[in-house]
Image 1 (cartoon, one colour):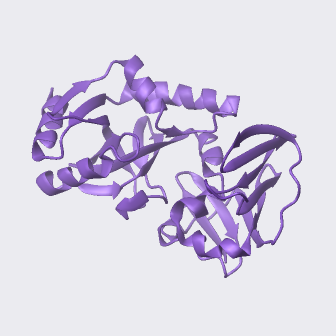
Image 2 (image 1 turned 180 degrees about the horizontal axis):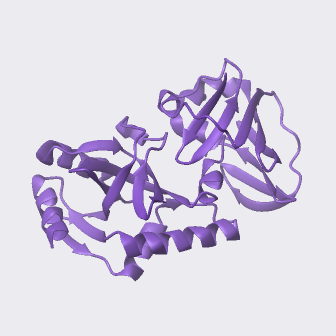
Length: 280
């Protein structure tokens, strides 16, 4: 493969062996005319020894920095060895070494997307990645955000069932300000929802969820909205510049878009409670 992709405003070239099966959702973002970055994927049975200053370390990721460029050893929790080594070779290029024994996992959206460090490129373009399911309703997006297993997809499905909304993505949204208005944009990872569309929708509201025996929706203060939304964005917190930029963008987002807390059941009454709050 030697093709161009565009995710948000980030246009890049991807070069990889035919043995690497690019996920179907990722292929929805194929196209573009002026790539500003090139990823080259190669198969390798071994990776170079780590070199540089450690920036972050966790069970499934080691990040090192050298001369403003990053190197990452990417793994899976519970497995001792990384499946890929991502190394930036220039400000506009990265080389990715992939263990051929792990090719079967490349059709899984998160594993493939992790190869490309896309969050590093998106924050440079003033875009945030929010853990959310988002629907389009009456021409605008409602974003349901919460930790995993809280009910994001359930609430999106309730709006689809009872209000005719259409789910655009069941697990992630790329948030970016375009011509003075914040939009939710397509992202090539959709979790277990299997719903992934490549389109842009202006944001009507962000809804932070929690489970409860009764439904109640309230608008959050800016401080609470910032705290809850910040916990659900994907940002390299070891990178001080990226982290500060994400905070600035989040402040602007919250000043422009109302953020609510919805304590909810899994019934139509949850839709009704949020609907009343949005009307107010």
